[in-house]
Image (tube, rainbow, N blue to C red):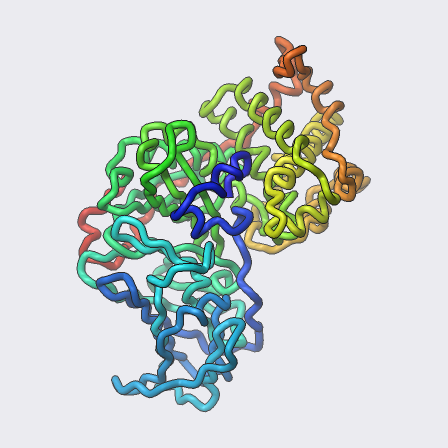
Length: 504
């Protein structure tokens, strides 16, 4: 979710109210049991022309497991029918229980029999675990429909085909190799986002990967000359954190909404993980010309630069994304260094002004229920800012360099404690700083940080920057060298409408 402007996002009636539920970082799916080596599953995904019913057919390439389980309980609420398919003939299949993730018994099925589920993707509700229809496109979280044979094998690649009506395309949501489209265990561990409908696609080469951008063809944003530069600059800015694209190949679904202002071009953003990471962005159509001033996309892409941190430790995941959304945009020339420092100063001031009823650790754990987003995001950003400054001032590795060392682990799930330990030095310097503030009700004191960076406030409370400060300059001039990987590989949207897709 948007970090600095949570109150505004929460106030978006209608569209935003149906999706804003919690923190914007990628979320894990409820656990699906892992098990011994089992046969891969073949998936066929179809959607009807009205974009109301999604049909998911699973066929096992060997003996069936005992059951098929959805990765989230939202799929149970959307189930229309479940059946066994053999030789084109369908018969009903038993659904277990009445609540929790959808579970269907498959014990005793022959390898020649398939499981077919029909799910209602037009159904309202479900928040970020549901679906949203805009401008002839429906965008769904995988939590609304994806199921897995349980237990599943961590090393398997499960083949996927899409069967779509004429004029309907699907955004890239899974992986691609010489054998075609596949999903793997990451699709079962994390929630991602996929769009179906009349789509325009742009493929943008970014450092270390490719950004696949999709938007409804019937919307103004799809043809806007501001769309591609916005994504390109945000992708390159976020890549400077580790030297690679924050998600190698990432799919960005841009959904237009008929509200907003030039000062707030993106009303909401959400990062998803899985076999192919994804981001959704609700863009205010009246504000499309000001997209390049937006910070939300950089924020979401930064989430994908680090391992997944569970929501109860949101202070760290959101703190990293909130701090770097300003620093990285300054490095990329999307805003001046002075604007970045002023944005951070305003943000921590707002966070400090929030009433503190419990410690930061407790506030983070209960953030969704208490709506303590501003305090958690900005207290987390204050701690991250502190970690970066202390690391640099002592002549040690910057926080950027520490995060870059974990690039190979960004598909993992790590608690805040585990992530701090992975970033820390042997003497536990970072751990000590975190421990000083995590269990305090008081907002982190940045007095030493401001002094080290030659930042102060005048009599009116306005931020004052000294003419020169080498430490301050090192932060906004840092960044890994981000080299291009050449050219995007073409991702076929499996639709006759692909002739209208642009390939940049």
